[in-house]
Length: 519
Image (cartoon, rainbow, N blue to C red; front, side, top):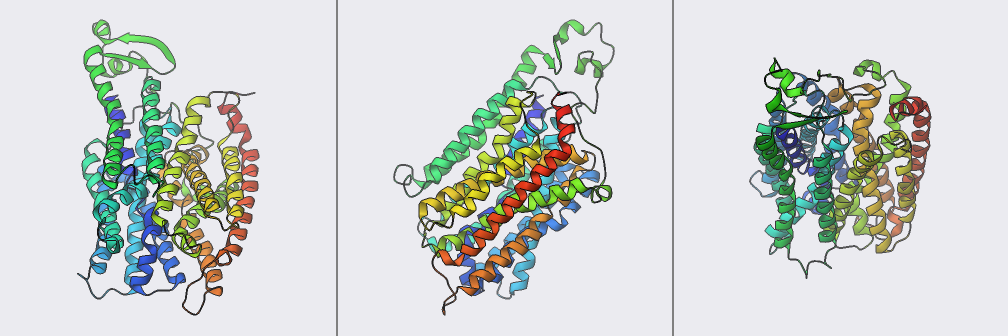
C-alpha cells in the first residue's frame, strides 16, 4: 500500500509541472514585442501549444508497450527541447530562428504535456481501481498549480530584472518537468492490483493537504495586497512545503505495514492478521489478499470496452466531444488570451490574474473528487454528464459578466472560468473511462482532448480577428470593445454546451442509475 500511495504522490508532483503552457499569458505580451508579431500570430503560438495534443495519442500507444517511466522521460525531454531552444533564442544564444521555427518548437512542447498527463492518468486509474475519480481528481488538481509555482519562482529570480521574465518562464518550463520526471521515475508504475484495501483514511488526509494547498495558493495569488505581508521568497518556500506534505501518507502507511502487518480489504469488513494466517495460507498471492481472490475488473464499471475506431462511430462520443469543446476548451482559450484581455482593460497585474486562475482551477479539478468521495454511493449523486452541465451554467454567466469593464468583474469571471474549466477537465478523465472503457484509455482520451487544439485555433483566431478590427494605428486596442463580441459568442457557445451535456446525461442515465445502485 505504501508503494500504491507513493505512486499517487509521484503523479501529483508530475501534474504540478504538467501545465507549463498555462503560464503563457504571463509572458505572451513580451513574446509579442520581442518577435514583433501580430495578435493573430501570437494566438497561433497559443494554438501551437494546444495543437501538440493532436499527436497525444502517440503517448497512449507508447504507454501500452513501454515502461511508464520511459514514457515519462520521453515527454519531459520533448519539453526540454521545445522550451529550451526558445529560451536560447530569447537570450541571443541562437540568432536564426524564424517565427515558424518558434511555432514548431511550441508544438513540440505542447505535445510533451500529453506524455506526462497520460502517465499520471494511467497510474491514478490503474492503481486505485475503486477510487479512480478521487485519485484522478487529487492528482490532476495539481496541474493548475503549474502557473502559480513557476510564477512564484520567476518573481524570486527576477525581482531586480523584471524585463527578463519571459526568458525565465521559458527556462523554468524546460527544466522543471524533466527534474520532476527524474525524481519520480522510480515510483511511477502500473501495479495492476485488482482489489484495493481500505483507503478512506489516506484519502481523507490527502484531501486536507490538498485543500490547504489550494487555499494557500489562492491567498498568495492576491498580489499586490499580500506581497507586503509575505515576500516572494517566503511565498515560494511555503508552496514547496505544501508540495512535500502529501508524502506523509505513504510514509505513515509504510510504518503501519512494518509494525502491524495488517491489511483491510474493500467490501470485506474483516481484519486479517497476517501473523496468525501464515500456517493456513499456502501461496504468497493469498497472503497478500488475505484469502480473497483477486478480481482485475473490480471497480471498473464501464458502459462498454471499445477501441478508438468504434468510439468514433458512437453518437455519445460526439456529444461528449462537443460538450468538452464548448466547455473546458473554451475556458482554456479564454485563459490563453488572458494577457491580451487584461492589457485591453488597462490591468497591469497580469501575472496575478494568471496565478488566480491557476489557483481556482486547482479547486475546480479537486471538487469533483471531493463530491465523489462523499456522495459516490449515495442515491442523490448525479451522473458525470449532469455534473458537467451544472458546471457549464455559471461559466456561461461568467462570459457575459465580462461585458462589464470593471476589474472586479474581471477577477470574478476569471475565477469562475478557472474553477469550471478545471472541474470539467477532471471529470472528463473518469468520464472517458466509464463511457469507453479502460483498456484503450490512453489512446481514447487523447482523441477526446484533440478538440482542444481545434477549439484553440477556431475560437482563438476568431477572437484575434475581432480584436484586429478594433486596433488603432499603432496596432493595439484599449477598452471593452476589443473583446465584447467575442465574449458574447463564447457565452452562447457555452450555453449550447450546457444543453448538449444534458442530452448526454439523458442518454447515459440508465447506466449511472445502475452504477449508483438505483432502481
